[in-house]
Amino acid sequence: MGELCEHSVHSHVCGNIRVGPGPIPWFFTSELFDSATRGKAAAVSASSNWIANWLVGLTFLPINNLIHQFAFLMFTFFTFVFILFTWKFVPETKGRTPTAIRKELTVMKKRVF
Image (cartoon, rainbow, N blue to C red):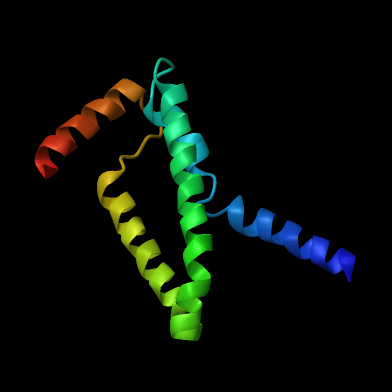
């Protein structure tokens, strides 16, 4: 039974976290920020990631006790909203310098706000 549990945890980490959105805060900062601000940006990014994980862990059981099997619908909704946000506001970074990305974000900020 112990080997089955170990295999299940390993499969979850390899299949979901590595492939899914879990590592995004850890590598995205290196593409958006230059070396002078990268450390601070990584700290904010990692802290935000851990706070979000903590909030999900903190709120899941009370929500599950209220709406039972539909508790995942709320988290699905938020995931959908975050996917739309990423699609709309996060620029493509492949093959671009941090300066060019920052310039695009500045132009986008002026358009949105």
